[in-house]
Length: 499
Image 1: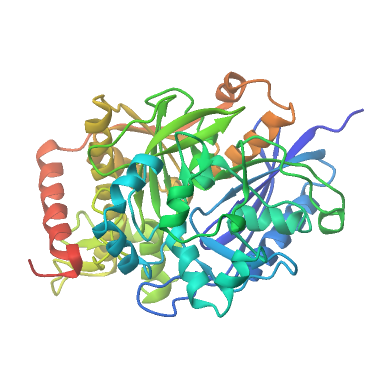
Image 2: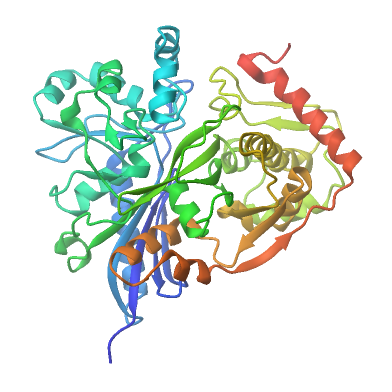
């Protein structure tokens, strides 16, 4: 009897490294998760230890494989990763020369502002579909090369390699044999031309990034080498790679233009399939790759919210408002409204559609009867208000209604949040039966390349709705809430609480 084919998906995120084993039906067979540290050396700076990322990823993979032993044979690995986070390492030793600079990091905002003033913004937008912002990888690469002694000289001599987290993991998994990335991750660097599908020489020069540090760009479903047999017990082919939000789009089976997903994790990311041609946003959204298969590109519109689950995590861990997320439901049940309290979680600035790196977080409307419940509710409501801002922008850009939003990520299991999201956005929110859609998308990509799946249609048929949340809130009450949000938002833009 032939053992059932299984897929190992690595979901390397902002706060934890996860490994999941899926069967051919897209069901979770085993899962392991390891959290790792967050480093904040200065205001607006966010760093990770690349060695800790690697060790937690490797440990999670080994645990998931051990837990799935006997269930079948793992035939391929898929990787989804936190995007834009930047690592520069020595080719000879594989050791990073500086902590990873995380996508949330704002240290390069002044550099980006200077480049914008010099007129580079339009060039970046035309070629990459992105805005010139510290969120992306290129200014992070230049910062490392300019602030680590001898790094720029070593980079120009071919001694150093750059990669987003997918590239770093591929390098480590293959024992330094492969320096690769996929088109979705490449499209988030400010260095990749989404029209020519190549690293762009003009952008490399503008950001002072030596071309020799860059990885080769492959399709999202492709041959990324195989893991060193000493790491996972045997060599396992790596056949799928995508940035986490692109993987979630794939895992949610958003294969038709107009289909939209929203992922709620550390941040929130709304992405719409826009088809074979890029849609240029008139509302400060990003034009990006959805995914690339066999050289054929599917584009997407995206809105990025920098802080979603991280706001709740701050209430729990930063100020000790509650001990466990299990307490959230009871806190929400204890209050019948937000009592005029709003949180704008701009801990690392505001993303789309505002793109305000100087904004900082604030809680407004506090009174003597404000308690824990109102603060928790304000953090969750903020996620929905920010999503509404993005959905409205997408409706304007696409000139189409958005009747359904497929929601996933760790926060999507909260029924209260999903219903409030439906009411505030006036959109039916569908939560899939498998909410691990980021990992599932990576697994689907790997399975597609190794022949476990024949087509996108076969994958689409596996998608199942667990619960649909339909808008039913009082229209006037919703309008009052939104007015309060917009007032709070205006008070924190550009770092000023008073306007």
